[in-house]
Picture 1 (cartoon, rainbow, N blue to C red):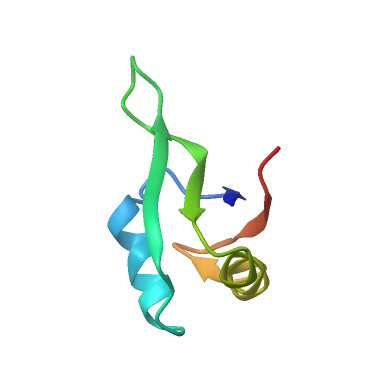
Picture 2 (picture 1 turned 60 degrees about the vertical axis):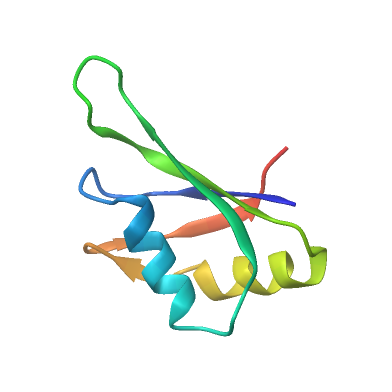
Length: 80
């Protein structure tokens, strides 16, 4: 399942998101993708996480929702 995470600060990295996930249970995250503007190289305030197991993905969405990172409250939902 792909998870869409929004409301990220421009300072957020894939490693930052990975650190948040490591604070929870051992989730099998296969990929974290942050999207950057090709001209400014700044983060476009959203990212995607891919998790193979749907049950784990649902748990990650619940854990990430309303988590604060770089003074921003994250929003997470299933990507369409």
